[in-house]
Amino acid sequence: MCFNPFSGFVMSGRRGIVKDLVWGKILSVGVDEIDEDHRRLIHIFNILSHSVMEGESPEYLAATLEELINCTVWHFSHEERLMLKHRYKEIEEHKAEHRDLIQSAKNLQQEILRADKPIADENIEFLERWLTEHILTADGRLGSYLSQVM
Ligand SMILES: [Fe+2]
Ligand SMILES: [Fe+2]
Image (cartoon, rainbow, N blue to C red; front, top):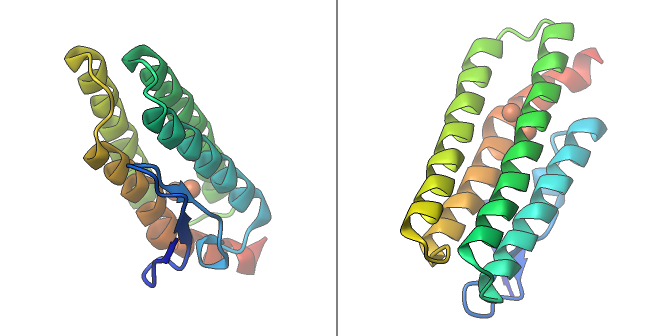
C-alpha cells in the first residue's frame, strides 16, 4: 500500500498490475452529486483493473471499458447541464476536455479489440491518469464555482 502525495488517495492491493483507486477527500470537488458520479466511475475503474489481473478475455475487458465510457459520457452530460444551469464561464474549455477524454478512451478500446490481447500495465496507468487528472483540475475548478452558486 502506498500513499500518493500528489493526489492524496491511497493505492492499495497492488498484485501484479492491480491498482485500486480509493476515494479520498482530495478527490472531492465539494458538490455531492458530482462526487457521487466520480465514486461510481472509480468503482468501475477498479472492476476493470481487477479483471485485468484475473486474465479476463479482451472482449470482457473491452465490455468493461465500454461500461466505464458510457458511464463517463452520462456523467459529462450531467456536469455540462450543471454548467449551463449555473452559467459557468469556462464551459467551452471544459466541454472540449470532455470530448478529448472520451475520444482517447474510445481509441484505447479500439486498440484492445484490434490487438486481441489483454490491457497492458501502461493502459491501466493511462486510465488512472485519465480518470483522476481531470477530476483534480478542471472538475475541481467547476466544483469550487458551483459550491458558491448552488
Ligand atoms: Fe468534467
Ligand atoms: Fe467529472
